[in-house]
Image (tube, rainbow, N blue to C red):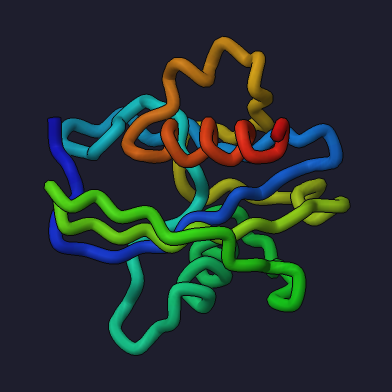
Length: 139
């Protein structure tokens, strides 16, 4: 399985009023890490970008949505030492921002809840991130 190594990226927990997280079904492309699995919206940091700028850019590129930067909050950093991979995780509580999205990346998108069977098909380290987020909300 392909993995990301020696990189940094940002992902956004797009959370609705029911504590569901908007996720994309990744493309089914050979050698794409987590192909045909669910994942958070986000991507790799470009040179000169801050992690927050990356998060805002990626949401626009993937969903054609401009998030309010004042409502995008740093949640935590996730580091995988075996891959030297750093992921900056942001949280954004949605109102109606995703009502008229145009998906530009992935096969589809949907809201996924803790009890949704698709949780078992969340790929990469995104599975650990969303389970940890929901566990913290429940405590």
